[in-house]
Length: 145
Ligand SMILES: [Zn+2]
Figure 1 (cartoon, rainbow, N blue to C red):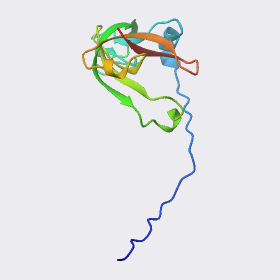
Figure 2 (figure 1 turned 135 degrees about the horizontal axis):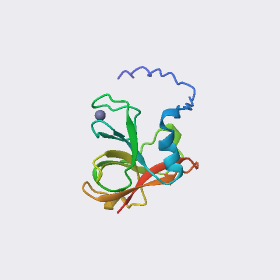
Figure 3 (figure 1 turned 180 degrees about the horizontal axis):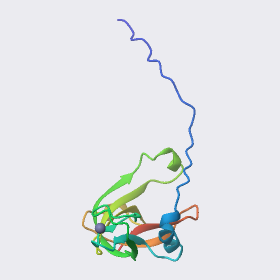
């Protein structure tokens, strides 16, 4: 019986990516998180809500937007429990990410914290709020309502 030849594999060095994202045109969004607000952008022309906020409307291409606080309750449309974590979260416990249709009409993707996995279901009510990430950055996330 012949043995199959060993598979040759090349291994890369570990790679670290650090992104610095420009935030000048969305300053109000980030300042809002610091103040405990979670802003979506709302088109002043057609009323389209977008989250995360954009500097222009993806529906009518209007550049005039305003920021509206979309905190409050919503309903889980889908979720996933992340067990196989990306390299930057290898030292973090497993976590849950949910896509939620907010009562305001906008759809938000964010981490769902403080929930037993068995209690997380499509259709469950959650609450969106401004939070601090573990590294102290202003962020936003869901908890079960
Ligand atoms: Zn618009």
